[in-house]
Image (cartoon, rainbow, N blue to C red; front, side):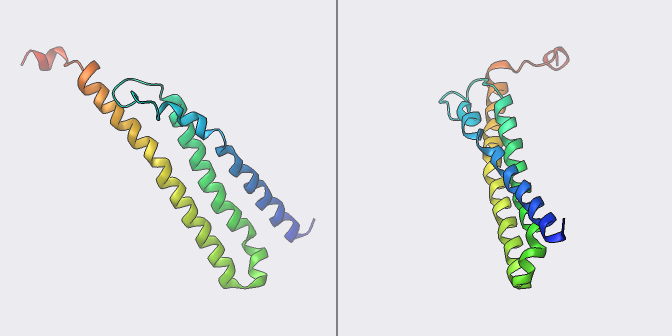
Length: 126
């Protein structure tokens, strides 16, 4: 197996890895519920969805890095531009994936503040 074939195989595997984000729309269903911020909803699907989004972001960069030697034959500026565009895409995915984290943290804070936060006996006695 020559080196071009190895690079292409690695890039293909990274591209297949980007498909792990397909179920995230269903995983974020609890975040879109009207009472998610003011009630204790399930956090597991949200965390799993965010983890899958981070894998997609890293796989996107991996595709560009794996294809760099192949694309460099067409021009080094094109190859670096491809890596830069995939890195920008990964940064955008990471920023958008941070939104459910923010909603989850906010809902946890609201829930603890208003419904389930109980002062410890030490602080309550002061």
